[in-house]
Length: 269
Image (cartoon, rainbow, N blue to C red; front, side, top):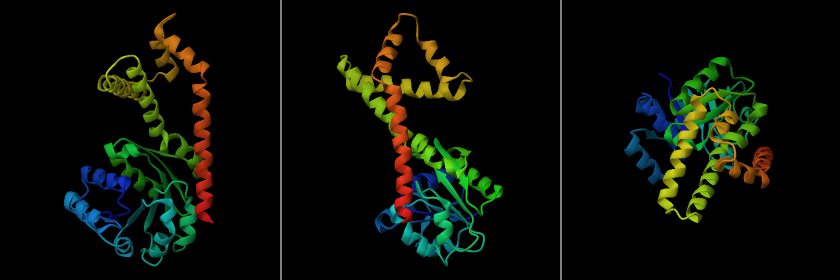
């Protein structure tokens, strides 16, 4: 059985551990690292997974998942160097950091796979994009697909597209939360109680997402099915277009992509 070490037990790290356990992984096949002893003890008590320091966790693992903040990567790489066994697969969940950064700080030939997940991992509905480093093979990618399949969906992309993925799906949940927040405020403005407005919008968002995933129709078709001639929906769409909502979303995602590129360059300096 593959032994997996998760370095960093924040929200994403914990979600991955929980997903792997729900998918049938034995607690003894997992280990995690956590800087705060109280947090480590709480997770061990709740999940049954032991914690360790970085060198100890890495030395025992076949797959090392790096889930620390990008700005914390330098000390982690120093601890990993010399602790990894031959052929250990390193999976990075650090936004903006290229596989070359890891390959340059780890033993020569270390296979690295870069992942951009998103926060719906905490409910088992993540969208994760994976890319192979220069030493990672299709077999390594298949291992990562199985790993992340426990917490959502997985797609392979060239590493050159990872900054775009970060902007689109990595940050994507925040855009939906922002839109839902605005729609709830609109409901309150129209006289609905906050709780009622929230129920209406959240369920509508959930149902629309299911339709998007299960339907073969393009989003344009799904939208047109709701948009009757001279009706309420087309009046709303006209206002969205008049206020440039579509252009604003595109510009926002471009800005997120540019910031992802900038962060990657900053950490590499």
